Image 1 (tube, rainbow, N blue to C red):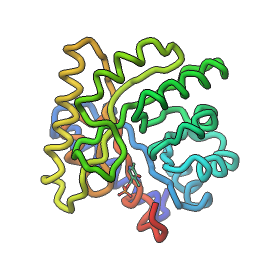
Image 2: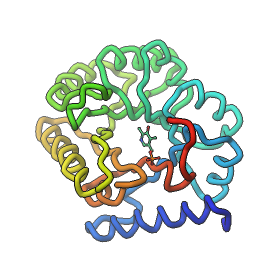
Image 3: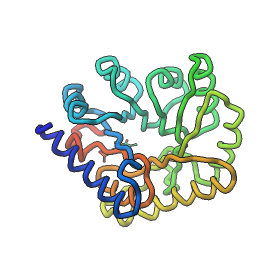
Image 4: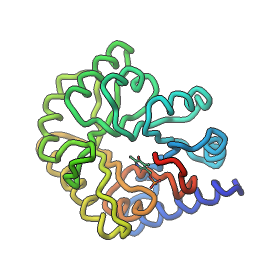
Length: 229
Ligand SMILES: *Cc1c(COP(=O)(O)O)cnc(C)c1O
């Protein structure tokens, strides 16, 4: 617990609790997904020993190799998922943050049904309308949710977003707010989506203040990545 990762983790956890308190939310209303992409297994083990319970990976194959070595942890997929890896992903992840098309929803449902399990996922929304980013435009989310109602092995539990990068978290805050407001509009239309996955190392406090139920934090726990994840 006294290692470098343990210290950083404790700091991140304290900042999450403080941000939750500032916005009048319970400290346990926010779960921390420790993003371990490109991080070697030994360092992930250190994080687990220090109290991390959920790990986030953005590539299916990289995650598969790590999960073999660390089978006790809970793993989330936070990166784009190709339909041809849907079966593998269903077997590996407790939650998929990156559902972004009806075709992928149908594949996940099919493989979930075959495996006899419910596939839990979040819809990734392209809140910045950036052409190069994955995620569904906000206007298309209701149609996906309506179509997914006939997919019994799929459970859509919330929304996820990766807003445009800006070093100043206050410049990112409007995107977090937009995701929460989208959830409120969808709730009025009968779609209950409790989870909001938003906020990364440099802006997770603003995300928590705007209602994040999950933050995805890599660098602030594990340090800088050398390879681009
Ligand atoms: C890499 C990544 C993160 C974590 O980024 P940091 O800035 O290192 O905290 C969060 N979400 C997604 C989707 C990522 O790919």
